[in-house]
Image (tube, rainbow, N blue to C red; front, side):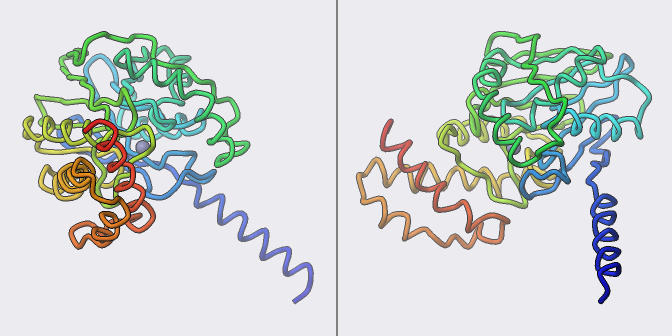
Length: 308
Ligand SMILES: [Zn+2]
């Protein structure tokens, strides 16, 4: 093969990669409520850190956006997806968490006049993790992080739960504290829809991080069940019903708390407990199972050992 041909093929591949540049698309959940379902894999320059779910509600007085993406460019892609559905401006951005893809696009929407809203502990956790999240995103996204300015939520209601209303749409924001401290979920009672934030993961296994809490996750999932939602927009994975969320998240939190946590309280040797449960037929079909499950059990064990 001539050098010129090799170069041509290389250039063709590069432009194909540019064509594959990920653009989220809005899907209707119900009525005027939409979800943007991100890919299940890792953050990348191609997906601009949009490897999570977002959503929006079109009201008579503008758009309420749930979570703003991981960067300025990611926020622009979210804005593009919204514009396909409505000309209305984004009036409110609600953040359900402090993990990068929940809020690092805030500044883009704030500059266009949106009010940025999160419960006060969510906003405090955003500020707390800013440096760490910006550094790790710079590693994943490189120069595509250009122009991203951390902008923690500025309207920060106190209390464990708050109900807000815009354009005839009421939404209830309440803590879950599962994946990150200060995580929250959004409940739209009129539509029977929950935006769970990083409480619910489907299609892929949830991750228990060093700062996550299995106890809070179990409790928050049971509280979500009590709402009897008809549609759940999970933090990651496709839009689902309560039964699937229970099978793939709720039951897993129950397992971590009631089996692994109970063994920890019982002071059983950790390695034996982890070995005994390394294969779980109910969950091992989920993406990332073999990458996360052992560490998840390990962290659950330590959490229940420390505070039985
Ligand atoms: Zn996430």
